[in-house]
Length: 134
Image (tube, rainbow, N blue to C red):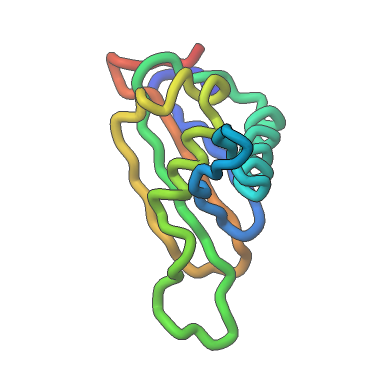
């Protein structure tokens, strides 16, 4: 469980990486599309199953977005989704669960790679002297 300072929490969500969708407008209101909502729920379920505690205060996070290696890659690097949209989806999905608010994120490391299976790996940890495990 999230505990001593410096300890990193880790979550892995298998499946095709998804970025935060653009807000939708209709019927006089703004809403989140179903695919984005489902991806956020996958992160929330993974966090609940992990037994981790919340970071209170400032934290940093690292994201590794892994795409399944195609049989014939057209590029040495995966293209979609954009890394910043994946980070936004994860940050918003875990607000009030893994951290009080993603506005407290003081650093983000992110990369996209090919691997044997599609998944997104997240690590997060309190900033020394500015954050702590609840």
